[in-house]
Every structure is written in C-alpha cells, then in structure tokens.
Length: 342
Image 1 (spheres, rainbow, N blue to C red):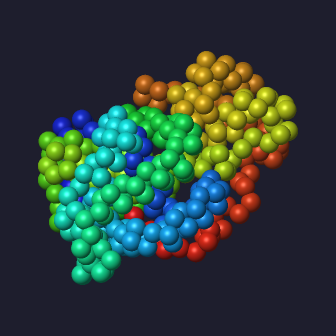
Image 2: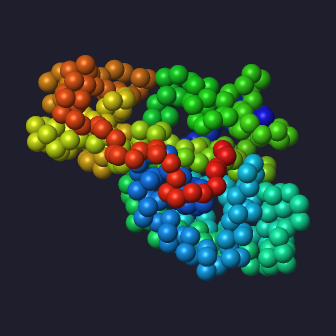
C-alpha cells in the first residue's frame, strides 16, 4: 500500500480545494472509461462520449497519449498538476502546457513501463497535445455545467468539514475513497498500490473532490501534496437520481419539495444552498415550514445544524413517488470502454 507520513500540524493546516482542472481531468478519465456509475454520469456520457471518440479517431497521436498516460496503476504525473487553492482552469492547464517534453515522456514511461510506443517516443508536443485535449473537454463538456458542478463540490466540502468537527479527521479520511484511510503512527494510506512511503510533514496538503467516480494523488515534492477523491454519491448524482415528483411539487411547491427529497441524508443549510442553487434565505424558509409540519428534524453537529427527514417526511416522499432513480441507473457502459482503477 502507498502511504504518507503526516504530522498533526500538517493535517491541521490541510484544506479542501475545488479545482476546475481536477474536475476536467476526472471527466477525461470518465470519457476514457465510457462507463457510468449513476444516471447523471450516464446522461453526460451519452451527450459527450461520441464527440470525444470522434476527436481521438481524427488525432491518433493524442489517442495514444491518453491510452498510455492513463495507466492501470499510475497516471503520467504531468497530466495531473497538484491543485492549488483558487486556481482557474486556464492557470492550471498552462502548467500542463509548460512541462518539458523530455519530462512528459519520462512520466509516460512510468505510467506504462517499457519503451514508449513509436508514435510518442520522439515527440516534443505531448504537453501541448494534452493541454489542448483538456481545454477541449473543459470548454465543451465541463464549463457549460460548471455552476452546478461547483455547487455539488462545495456541498461535499461542507459535509466533510462538518464531519471533521463532529467525528475527527480519521473518520473523514477513512471515507474519502477506496484505499484511503488513517493508520496508526500518523500515517495516511493514499492507495492500495505498493509504492515507497513519503514524508510530507510540513508540506501543504489539500483534499480535492471531483464529481466523476475517479481518484488519484498528486504532488510537487516537497512543497505540496493532494488527494483527489470522488464526492459523495448522493451529491454527485443528485440531478440524475433522486427528484421530487410532480405530485410532491404540487403539494409543497417545487423548491420546497426538492429540499425535502434531498434530506434522505443529513444536510446543513449551507449544503442545501450549494446543491439546490437556492438562496440561503429561501432554504431557511423551506426548512422552517417543513420543521413546523413535522416532516424534517434537526440536530447539532459541532458548530453546524443538520436537517434530515422524519418518518412522516419519509412516508410522504415515498408515497408521492419522489426520489426514484432514473431508468437505466448503473446498468453498464455507454458504450464499452476500459476500466478505471483508483
């Protein structure tokens, strides 16, 4: 297993970061795999996978770069610069474009050991090609939906931060993604692969959610390290999954019904605001009405107040037919593609 030595001060200074570039690279991984894990991903793949594959068919060098760079156990490092707080997509992708060609080729050899394929071995434009592909995916497939994605990612950050205050860092780290957990001796296991441990005490450590079911680690040794993880499924797939039925919307109003449906798991007002796109005042008013009607309850978790459905709220949601997942959820690839390993 791969693990990092992290002292208490480093963990205490760590932060959650939303990264447009990480979200775009995770979307590239999803396109490469072609396999949906929830209805939201399935709809997104149906909309964007044909154009992506057509682009690579017309550009076999970039297609080969993607196949080699997204190795089964290791991603070519130059494709995943360590996310930085407040960094725009344009600034992040410029770091990909600026990588020295020889270094990019070295990274590709590590992602798939052995000689590079002939189409890549002598090329000096690989960073440029990678940056162009990421820019295309950002502009065509991520940016049009970025406001919603950002709300989902911010809601995940709120949820994790609340849990840190309530259950401690170990509980949060154990739940980030498969293979990540807190070990005895101030060690953070970051994956299940057999790689040498790293001493990162004193470095900047960030945790970065992405909406596709993807995850990886990145670093700029020795200054900065990052763990990228898939955000909570109930948030990542909410627009393609649990929805308020027309009947529930007619009874409560669409906005209030949407809040009630989301409360199958505890949420704070800040999370609900981030996920729904409603204002904080509107969410607060909906919660007050739902509380007075006995459909939701609240409890304090550290400095936050979390809301969830009561038994009566659960009965109302289920009886109205709300919350059913869209047909075809999780029913396989769109169409076939390679698998992804975290």
